Amino acid sequence: MFYALARNGLAPRPLGHTHPKFKTPYIAIVWMSVFAFVLSLLLGWKWGPLVGFAFIATLAVIVVVIVYIIICLGCVWHYWTKRRAEFNWLLHFVLPIAGAVLFFFPLYYEYVKFPPTYPIKYANWIALGWIGVGLVLTAILSVRAPERLRDMERVYVEDETVAPGRA
Image (tube, rainbow, N blue to C red; front, side, top):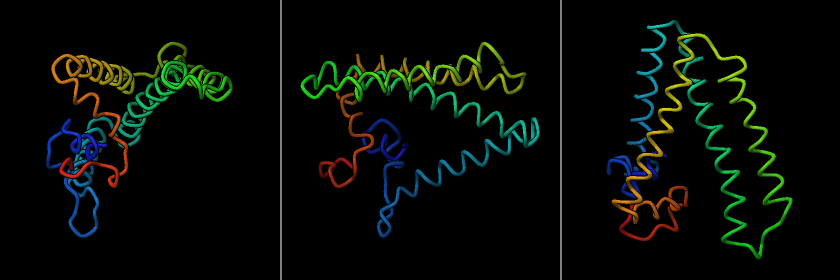
């Protein structure tokens, strides 16, 4: 992910470099590996390995679930507004809405029904804060640099389709 963001000018440029021989984003891989290693050591040292793992897992799962719900709703919006001729009620409305609703329940149980105890509960609020930071940055980009935001559609595009000179 950091590689794709750097390739589009939304993260530090060195993270977008690929290995000359293997064509892998080796700098982004090393950076993420070091970050994950240090974070897991710090959390394991602070609260023990089991709580440290649960903290990281909770943090990651909440963000992934919220992103999944947004993608489901985005599918409905995209096909309803941009590709209306291809709109299929089952594929582009029923299934995405069902996915969004079904993934809402884990969030409900995580935050309302059975909230975890501290320190794992901190992960809930950090995840919401992280999402909030993403929304604020998106709003800033839409005002100050809308061309960079338009490039986001290329974040997960294969390298072969990227225009020369962009990577």
